[in-house]
Structures are given as structure tokens and as C-alpha cells.
Image 1 (cartoon, helix red, strand yellow):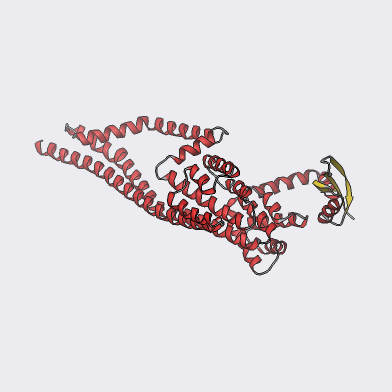
Image 2: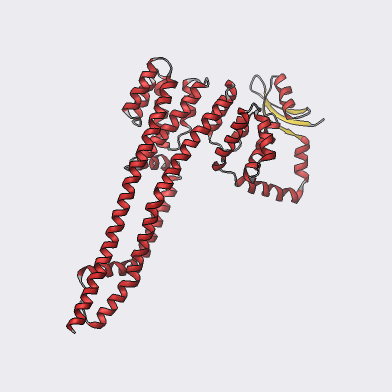
Amino acid sequence: MPSFTYSAKDLRGESVRGSIDAANRKIALQKLAAKKLRPVSVNELGVEAAKRSSGLASLFSVKSGESKAGSLNRSLALPFLTGIKELLNCGIQSADALRMLSSRLSDPRQKLLATTLWDDLRQGRTLSETFRKQPKVFHESVVSLVEAGEATGSLNNVLSRIVESMEESKAIKGKLVAALSYPCFLIIIAIGLVFLFLFSLLPRIEGLLDSLGGNLPTSTKLLIALSDGMLNYGWIGVLGGALVAGGLVSWRNTKEGRPKFDAMILRIPGVGRFIRDTQVLQFTQTLSLLLENGIIMVQALSMAERSLANLAMRESFSEARIKVTEGVALSTAFKSTGYFEDMALDVFTVGENTGDVVPGLRQMSRQYTEMIDKFVKVFLGVISTGVLLGVFAMVGMIAFGIISAVFQLSSSLSAG
């Protein structure tokens, strides 16, 4: 029978170490629980010995495993959770679902993820614990929701809501990419035309007029000056822009700079509002799901905060949570953050007065979904119009300068 070494805490909180015989890790954990010990780590002796004796082959194997694990990222979460949700809806248990996915998935990265999770689950861990060991794939908010679903026996419902929320976020991102593709295409074409006119046509026209002794019109002189400036000093602008961008990225990655950078982003017109509304939508969806699955308010607020990627907003919601613990109404605490629309708060307050905040949170989520859709359409319409006008203005200015030079050249030839 396999032996396991363990490190645990007893009822007095003192550390206890030893070994125990058990058929598998799950039974070993059950035996420790029967002894009223809280395990910190449990490792099979045979596995540890195999690891130590594997030598150079084990080294390469570990590196290979790390390389494969490095390919796991957040993009796998939605399709993987969708697969588990569909199997659970068919009445299959989570362990069986992971086992089936590990053997049937064709995508190598998803297969690796399913196999890794299944191996952890076989050792007696819960589904949420296996998810928590893959932070590159599953966000902490997802893990918390799965943990809540396991505790309340509503894992199917929780996974369905998680998948629905992730699909909504993916749809919003898809709309942005699709709507921005045309303006980006126009910008690329405009830049190509500008470079063609400034670096190819204008120097030839300038040389031709100089050889004929003609004077360039003012508009053409401005274009040629711009061309010379870009050729001679453009690299300085590119280098300066790269240094500024690098400095901003480095500052954002610091502990002190990240909250300030996130707060600064929220003040950018248009972009800041979009980020704010999407974060509020994420928060309200997560909070409603936690509350309806039996998580108490303060703990649910703390979990929902961790779903916010913007640290400036997370700090504001943390302050709001503290106010709730002091007895302040949830709607009042939300209003103090400054991130909620008055109309959405009014709808939520009505639900709060009934004693059940979950319906109000759901209604608020629907309102923010509609607001985000409308904002995306209007914002992208403005961006598309602005890009078109800018392209037409640049091309028109260049065309006018070239046409003026051509007329000047014709006049010089006629005079000659």
C-alpha cells in the first residue's frame, strides 16, 4: 500500500509531521481528518522517490511540462467551461466530465488542461481547488464562483451563468474588433498614400521645377518641408514615442503606478466610460451570482471586487464594502464610488427595499449591457466618421499641393 508524508495542523494550531498508509491521496486525507488534523501538504513517498531518481531525463521532462503549461492561458477558459457545463447538464458528475474531456478533446492545449485538472481531482481535490492551481487560465472570480456552486450544490447553474457572462464579454470585444477594422484599414491606406506623396512624388516635382527655374507654390513648399522634416527628424519622434510608451508600461507595472495609471485611464473621454461600465457590469453579474448561491453579502462583495481588473475601481469598491459592514445601505455605498448611473441605482434601490437585492442586481446588469451596446455603436460611429474626415483632409491637402505644383509647372513651361 502506498505511503504518504504529511504536514498538518492539530486542534491547537501546532504543526504535526509524519507518514500514513493509504490506498490513495483521498483516503489519506480522510484518515487525517479522522485524526482531527488539518492537512497542509500530503505527498506520496513513491512519487517523491521517483522524482529524485529520474536524473537528467526527469530534468528534460520537467522542462517539457513547463513549456506545455506555459501555453495555457485565459483564452482556454470559455471553451473549456462550456464543455464542462454541457456535460454537467447531461447529468454527468464533474469528475467524470473532466475524465471524459481529458480523453476526448482534440485540441492539445485543452487536452493538457483537462488532463492536469483530472489528475488533481483524482487526488481528492475539489473542482475549485483544481481551477485555483491554474491561475493563467481561470480568474480568481471564476474560482470563487465555482467554489460557491460546490458549497451550495448549484454548480450547473453557476457554470451556466459564468459561461453566459464570458460570452457577453467576448461578444462586446468582437463588436469592437469588427467595428474598428474598417477605420484601421483606412488609416493604413492613408498613411501609405502620405508616404507615397511625401517621399516619392513631391521630391520629383521639386526637382523638375528646380531644373526649369520655376517657383513652388506655398502649399507645395509646406508639403516638401513636412517631407524633409519626417525624413530627417522622424526617427526622433519614433524613438521618443517608444521611450514614452515604455516608460508608461514600466510605471504601470509598479505597485504604486498601477492604481494611478488605472485612475488616469478612467478619465480619458470615451475610453474611460467604456472601461468603467464594463467593469461595473462584471461586478454586478459576479455579485448577483454569489448572493443567489448563498454567499453572505460582505464575503460576496470581497469576491466580486477581485473580478475587477481596474485597481482604482477596486479600491473604491473596497471602501464601499467597508461602509456596508458599518451598516450603510448597499445602494448608498454604490453611489459613493461615483461609478454607477443614477437611473441604474434607482432601479436597484427599488429591489433593495423589497429585501432581495439579487433581482435588482440582475436588472442593473441588463441596463449596463444595453448601455454598453449603445455606447459602442455611437462611439465607433464617431471614430469611423472622424477617421474618414481625417483621411479625406490629408489626401485633399496632398492632392492640392501636387495639383498646385503641376499648374505652376505648366505656367513655367508656357512662359518659357
